Image (tube, rainbow, N blue to C red; front, side, top):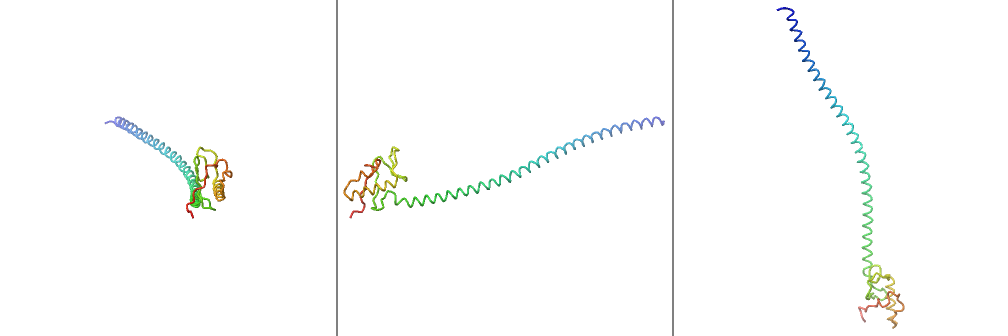
Length: 174
C-alpha cells in the first residue's frame, strides 16, 4: 500500500468524522438555543406572575379592610335594630292595656260604623280624616262627662267623630 492511498483514506475519514461532528455540534447548538428560549419565556412568565401575586396581595388586604369595615357597620345596624325592636315591644306592651280605654272613668272607646281604631288613632274606613288617639280619648271623656251630667255631648265632638264614637256600657255596674 502506498502512502498516498493511506493519506487519501485518512483524509476521507477525517472529512466524514468532521461532517458527523459538525452535525452533532449543530444539533447541540439548536437544543441549547431552544433551552435558552424556554428558560427566557419561563423567567418572563414568572416575573409577570410574581407582579400579579403582589397586586393580588395588596388588593386582598384592601378588601379585607373593607370587609371588616362593612362587618362593623352591619353589627352597629343590627344593634340599633335590636334596640329599636325591644323599644317597640316595650312600647307595645305599655300601650296594649291602655289602648281604647279612658283612664279617669275606665271606660272603653267603642268605634262606630264607618270607623276603625288603630295604633295611630281612629280613622274613617274610606281613608278619610283621622281622629288622633288623644282626641278619641278626649271624646270618650266628653261623652262620659255628658252622660254623667245628663246631656248627649255630641256638640263637643269634632265633625268626624260625631255619631261615630259612643261611650260603651260600663262592665262593672254598681
